[in-house]
Each structure stands twice: as structure tokens, then as C-alpha cells.
Amino acid sequence: MHDSLLLFGATGDLAQRYLFPSLLHLLRDRLLPDEFRVIAIARSEHDDASFRDWLRERLGDDYDSSLVDELLRRIQYVPVDLGDAEAMAASLSRFSDRPAVSYLSTPPNLFASACRGLKAAGLLEAPSRLVLEKPIGHDLASAQEIDATLKSALDESRIFRIDHYLGKAPVQNLLALRLGNTLLEATWERRWIESVDIIVAETAGVDGREGYYADYGALRDMVQNHMLQLLALIAMEPPAAMDTDSIRDEKRKVLRALRPMTAADAAADSVRGRYGPGVVDGQAVQGFKHGGHEDVETFVGLRAWIDNWRWAGVPFRLVTGKRMPSRTTEVVVTFKPVTHWLFGPGERKRARANQLRVRLQPEETIELGLMGSLAASEWAANELQPMSLDLAMLPPKRRIAYERLMIDALKGDQTLFVRDDEVEAAWRWIDSVSAAWREAGTPVRDYPAGSWGPAEAQPFLPRTLTTHNGRKS
Image (cartoon, rainbow, N blue to C red; front, top):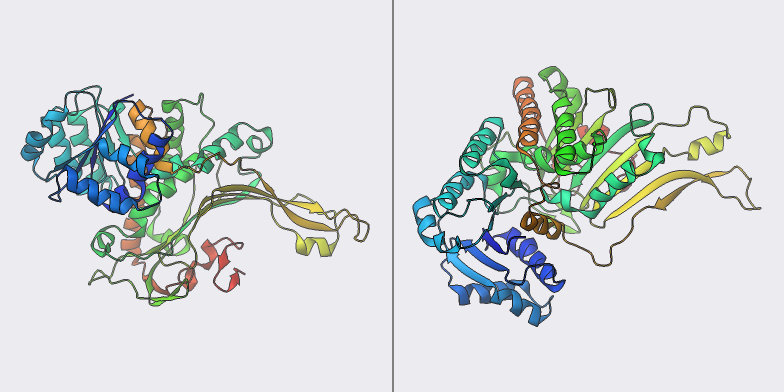
């Protein structure tokens, strides 16, 4: 387990909200090496003392002061321009005294120069490792260009492409439920499953990130990584073993089996939207300021098809958007109705499809929706009602997903990280969607902030999704 972490982008939002709090939790639970150190790196002109004061203020009063003190003692700060490889090498070479994990919490356009600077500083020599945040590139060509730079400095076994959704407990529990139980393993295919919905909805807008979003949009920002990784885990074949390469081999097969979208499919299988002014959580909010970039979406709905034996004909509906009525990330697997209905017409009206619902946020839960009888003397014996089974085993302490991933990177376990061929397969499908939109002239439709997207998005949303006006009909 490596005991040296170089954290690039140390003054960024991700580091403040998730990475440093994760380190605090790991330190509290004594999961880090005794000699663990953090080299915090950013462009701001801090020294050790001023950065520690800055970080203490942002961590606030949520943590025990002695624990914060212990973390801050382990932190050194180095101001570096990641665009200058020579300056990086000069500033960071003194930290090459022991194997390190370099964590690039930076925009992807800095990956190549940062990699060259780390190489020159001697910080990528085996067994040192490199962690990169999403997105890896803007399209397939740029992803391959970044990958070529990475591979010139270190091999794939030491490259960790992070997707924090894979570190969430319900995602890992989903694999255990599916592969460890006959009930689900036997029904996890097209004969029994009607559809799969993956929803990532955010109440936040893109305030302050308009420039980034103008280049990426919802398709590249959310679908290419988080949502396709969830799809791959749900749809993959059972691996030969629960080891790193076996799991990632099966995910890659799913991503390669995604049917490319064509211009003829675009109207039926996709919808794009961009939020305008509206009301979210009772507060009036402004619309997205696109700055002349008319062809950028903050909402996307897609119907994906996996062309293999297990999933032929089963729609995977992917929906993500900004300024939605509620913040939620969930996977809904809807099973087909029973073959022959034996109960009365009243029960038929109350019938609900069996559903496995995995919520990743705001709370982390797994529920199985079934039909059952009220089974009491004042009701008819066969009067059916929906019932829900809670399948989640709550951990003793709620974890930030990054905690698991940071520990795995320090240990060298790549199971929950994304391999190069997965990234390329995902970009191939995303590029087909972008090309289909261009050829078909797919419009970006306006929707008011606080709604579930444009009116055309209704067929892509599960009927059980809560709206600001109640239940979706």
C-alpha cells in the first residue's frame, strides 16, 4: 500500500467536497499507512501554512478538531502550473523518494502535460500509479490521444481511471444480489425483464461551468461515463471470477454490443433539452446561459439497445438532466407481467410490475417491488396490493464513494476503475449519438427549470418517477 498521495487540483470543488473529507474518514478509521502524506498541488500561491488555514476553514466544524489537525500535519502544499512540464519536474522531483499515487483532479486538457511533468519528475516509475478523473477526452479521437500519452509514461496496470459511482455501496450490492441469488440470476434476461431505466437527475444548474458545459453537454458529461458504467454492470454476463480483469472484460463486451445510433433512429430514441428560467426547491432560478453555443444540451434522454442474446429487444432508457425537480440517481429494472392473470379485474387495476429499484442518491437503498395480499378478515383473501421489500444492508458508517476508491488506488486494486478499452467502447457509442444528432438536426428543446425535461421526454421517464406535481402519469 503506497503511503504518498500527490493530489492535483487541491483547491478545486471536488477536493474540498469529497477528497479531503474522504481522507479524514480514512484517517479516523486508521485505514491509512502510518507514514501517509499528502502533497497538495494547485496553481494558487499558498505555502504550507496558508493552505492548511485555507483548508481548515473549508472543512468547517463538521469534524473533530484533533482529527483535522492530524490530517493537516500530513499535508505539504506546492504551487505548480500543470501546463508547464519543466516547472512540474523541478518542483515535484523531491517527492520521488518513495512510490506515490498521483491523483489528477483536473480538466482533461491538462492530463497530457501533467503526465509529461510527472514522468520528468520521476513520479511515474514503477510501482507508482496515476489516477485520473472523468471525462477522459471529448470524443474517441481525443481519448485515444490522451491514452497514447499515458501509455508512453506508464503501463495500463498502473493507470486508474476513476468513476465514483462504482465506489457506491448499492452498486456493489447490486452485483452481489444479482450474481449471488438464484431468484435474480435466473430472471436476469430478456425473457423476464421488460425494461431498464437509469436516471441521474440534479437540482443544481451549471452556474460557473458554462464554458465546460458548452464543450461537453449532458451527453459527454454524464452519459459517457457514469451512466454507461452503470449500464455495463447491470447488463454484463456473469464473470468467470470476481477479479479485476474478469469483471472489466464483461463490461467491455456490453459496451461493444451497444447498437450505434443512426440519424433514422435519433427522433425515436433520443431527446435533448436545455433548461430555461423556472423554480427549483421553491427558489426562482435563471436559465442556462449558453453564450452563443446553441447546440448544447443540459438534458438528454436516450433509448439504448444491446445487441446480444441476453438483452435483444430490451430498452435501456438513460435520462439525465440539470435543474430537475429533485436530486436522484436510481436504476429501475422492470420485470414483465405474469403470463396469465388469475385475479379479478379490480386487482388487475391495482397491479404493478415487479421492479428492482436501486437508489444511489440522495439516500442509498435497494428495494424490490412485489404484489401481495392484504390477508386479513375484513378484506377478500385475494385482494392484491403492491408491497416493497427493503434489500439494503446499511453499513455501520455511511461512506463517501471516494473513500473506497482512494484506498483501492493506494493498494493497487483496479476492479472498480475503468480500463482503456472500456473508455474507447463507450466513446464509440457516444460519438454515434453525436453524429446521429448532427445528421438528423436533432433540436435542443427548452424546458422550465424544476420540470422533468421537455414534453418530448415523457416516454423516456419511468411512470413511478416523482414530479413536482405528484406522480408521473
